[in-house]
Length: 229
Image (cartoon, rainbow, N blue to C red):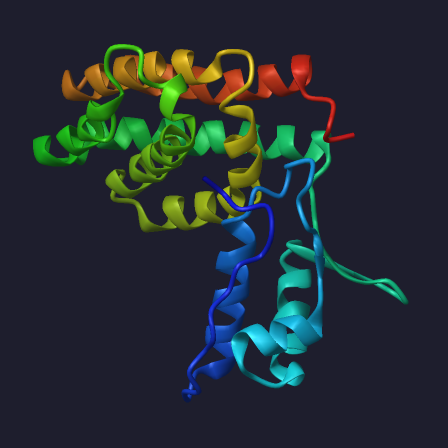
């Protein structure tokens, strides 16, 4: 389950301290459920300094970098806030993600090993017999892992890197919407059909199913999500 506030651990001083701080804050932010109603979006430099066990100067440098990437915004006289994307921005990212992930599915059918494809099925062995909703937080994590694994199995590093840059903004909305409108139950059915197409090396079907599955998220947001406005 994604937390609704930033959780970080103290950082040991190393020669790559700046990069480590940046990665720690980025990973903490992208591991949050930023679309939760009670999400704590304001970041306190002093509190971060105490949590990480370092001075505030490198934290400011890391926050400046995160602002350039669109993960945080600095509002004069108010502070630093984690950015929630607008409905339009989310829908555009989902559209691009659908194109990237469907191409990844095509590449999997052509290049991935049988063992690699089989690893996707193992992600869902504990959710048989209607157990998805009863373990929704665990399933949410597996759902995210499934989509990241599709990109990994494509074997195309640039495709995965491009998708990862989008996914850091989409992870929160995926985590929140998976429990809405019976999406989890429908999601696991979609996933199993996708895996079957990949196992059969049916390139056109796998590509289409992955694209439709991702675009279903966009359709759900357009029809039911009002907390992005």
